[in-house]
Length: 262
Image 1: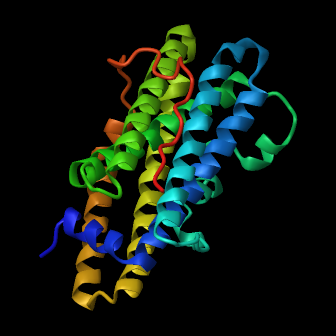
Image 2 (image 1 turned 90 degrees about the vertical axis):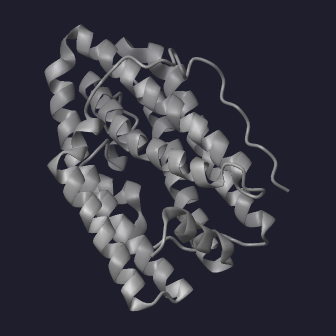
């Protein structure tokens, strides 16, 4: 009926749907950049050695947001309002996953448990981001308009995921293993539900913009529910496993700049 490639091509080829896609992505990346910036500033004294890596993580997220903004500008588009039901980061926060923005706005040092929560949340969400970017790179890595952007973002997301593995394993060796596993499981189960809800909402908006027939919208919704069922049953396990990454110290250097798209 249709493939992931044809679906995304349809979204990318239409200015209105592309504008919404990039606006949602840019908003999420900007939130991630702000969160990491605040966490870097509030790290407890016992974990200050993490500051350069958390700062680099935030800088990368900010860069990704600028990339999506630049992709819109290249088409002469301006960002559109992001529907609340498509706000992945906001919905996770409302479920109590990760560090609450109210806490990050206060000038009070975080605790070691807060940093374990942050890294566990990031390990789960970066797994999702890395997988999505692998898919986009597969289908659009050589696209004349999107190729450079998706390749750069995919590389960064792989680094972010490796960083989370590395730091959580270090903390597990320091005696936090049970806390990490419990937090990872909580984050994973919440994330797969939020991802399902956001996916349904995004596809509903895209369907209205692109005037998809009812049968196509129903089939896409059924596919999203099927993915959720699999992840609820067994797929969540890939989000909670920890292994030493091939990329060691992946956030140990300075952030790279965003490419030019003009």
